[in-house]
Amino acid sequence: MFAIPNGGQRNIVTATKLKAEGVKSGVPDIFLAVPSKAYLSHGLFIEMKSEKGKLSPSQKIWIDGLSKIGYMCSVCYSFDEAKEAIGKYLGIE
Image (tube, rainbow, N blue to C red):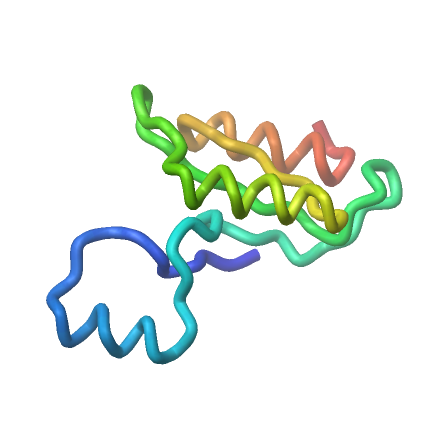
């Protein structure tokens, strides 16, 4: 499992460097690179949001696209929700 550094406030030099390296706006925050036979999924993407956070249009596009090609995607509003989503996905609720 790893984080994807695609959000947050950055200075222009750092933002330019990350864009050149391939960082894309809207990609979910965390990826669990474990396939699941139970969910017929290649892996699990998690988008973390604050309690009142909402998905941006680019996040909706990414989540929809990733879901269509065989990835499980979950939007979580707390550590506990993310932990639960991972446990459910791995079958270790």
